[in-house]
Image (tube, rainbow, N blue to C red):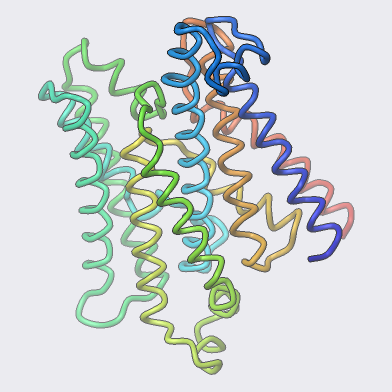
Length: 326
């Protein structure tokens, strides 16, 4: 591994560790770094144990896992559609999840039923997009993209209608779900396992992703089964996005811009892009969530707005540097 790339990995890991430290020490309850460390080692007080191990740590791990899933889903979607503006929600996944979740919230369902409805809605939206785009023959990236954009617009209209017709007591919960909310993050284990599996498998398949990103014709000439591989990419992206939306609601920006940030920094080889995108996406959402719950305690800010507020200036700075260098 080149020395520069090793330095990038070490720098990203260091930033991630610092972000975790900030997440565990920040909040309405003041707990110092020494107390957090003692709690993690099993020597803290019962109150610190509750705050750190039952509230902050699961939330921090969930934020990192969801950020990583959205980032890798963005990488795969941009390869699948061969479009730099593609992102995980472009095929209507978030719209389908939002409509189903808002219907569940309106009916007074509990958290588990809302999560189940969101996951079912997300997967149903993906299946609908793929079925329509498939038609009677093979689907193309352009047809898939157009179908997803149109259905996403329809889901957006349905979401607006639900918000306008919903009782006032449900509106705040609906809006926070639509803007991303990690308040109920208690079980990050399944998210971390899914993130590890998808990261490992896509990194192993990075050579095929590199080939496919050059074009279908060249990929076919080199022996890649394009139709089957695209279907696998679609399935993995749909699963990662659906699970992310189910866990924390809709959080934009991460899956769109993080892959571009990584490509600006480290190049376009997916053996590097995928793991670095996972680290950057997880760290970005972790920092945004920490700021969302600690900037104006006890009030919580929308996480999605903060991911954009953090990422946009960084992205513009890197773009300006890249333009000057060229």
